[in-house]
Image (cartoon, rainbow, N blue to C red):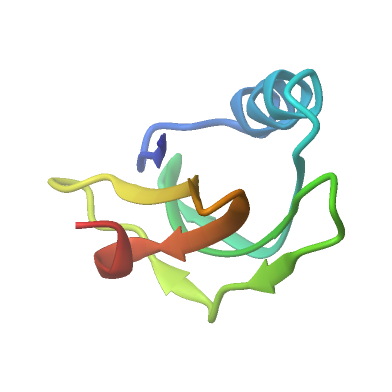
Length: 87
């Protein structure tokens, strides 16, 4: 599970992308917006080594609650979740 927080920077997002790439997971993001140094919105795309891909809606980053995404495996097939789907 990866948590996206309001205090993340572009460098933090790039580091998360590199860390996931080492695990065979492609993490891309766009539609990012900051206000007063806090991450406000993000849209994420996650692609697994087998080609399974999912793109989130544009998500609002709550300063009090991290926005999560994750990849789990069910019967050997990746399951990708974003936001409240991961709870």
